[in-house]
Amino acid sequence: MPSRALILVLALLAQDAMARQTVASLKPLLVEALKNGSAEGMLSSPDAKAFTRTFGSPAPILIDVVRIGSHQEAGCGRLRVTTSQAGVVERDKKGQALPAKDQRLVYQVNYCERGRFPIGEEGR
Image (cartoon, rainbow, N blue to C red; front, top):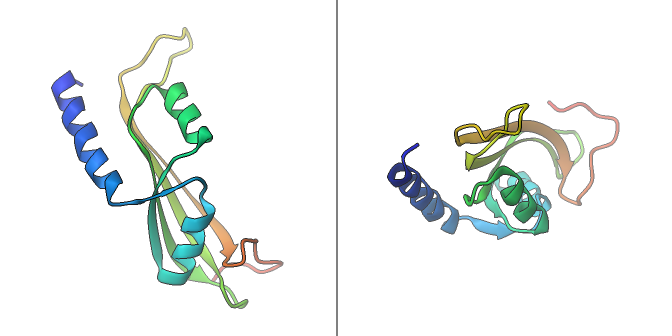
């Protein structure tokens, strides 16, 4: 990606990140999504800084959480979590840097507002 294009992409991502709440962990976003249906945040912690160094991207780590199901137990639900970062540099088997690209990890989790996982129940 040419450096001008990369700078433009990073500027747009920075603008999006400023509208998001900054969090040190995933937990507050999980709880907010359970209560409000969705939550958006930007991870800012020693772990986030380590990921930034490891993957060679100055772009923020963005997290989007959406409630996609419920449980019989009040305050619990099924959540879809999407974690993304732009400009991630991966390395090949020889350790050579590959072209930077946007990366995204999507997964689902059962969670309760009280900060625990539901016991013995499948999501609906």
